[in-house]
Image 1: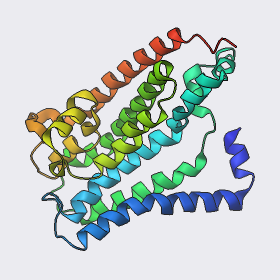
Image 2 (image 1 turned 180 degrees about the vertical axis):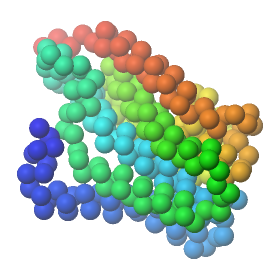
Image 3 (image 1 turned 60 degrees about the vertical axis):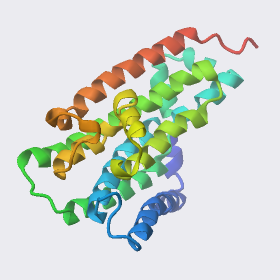
Image 4 (image 1 turned 90 degrees about the vertical axis):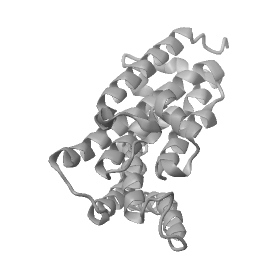
Length: 254
């Protein structure tokens, strides 16, 4: 329904997608401005940072496209409109994800793919079969990890009821964090996004293997191939949090 309503006005839809693409491109423009003044950022070259940026932006773009509407959970819980989702013969999580489905977010995905393409072409890597196969694995696993963050954030809103910005700090803030090399951040922050909220497995850890760089926080050599496992485990934990939040929901009382 939301897709049909969006494409009903094709010119408006195309302009909105282009506008979304240009707006999200400002993040990478900021990186380009930095490299206009320096040769490296935390010891990483522009193509390497573009590789990190493209992986993070593309993976997050797919998660945002499918589950980006979940940041409105708090408003639904406060005004009682969440009750209408509970009486429909469809999974509640699917309804929340599809609510106000914004096809314009394809602009973010497109921008991420373009930067990733540049990074793959420009980066100096001795490509092998495992490294080539790891790129799509990173994108899929990264999208699942970001999706789990969206679900966990929505589950937290059952408790807080007004925590959209807290959720955004880990979703939109998380993808911005991963667009820069881990060497520019403090060790405690890197540990936090590795062991607590495993965003580092979206790109930092597997990209270190592809680019022949040391792993963040001294992880073992095989950590680069853990993103699928991390995605499954984190997704299961987010699902448990969602079910717990759903069982605790008591409506507004009105």
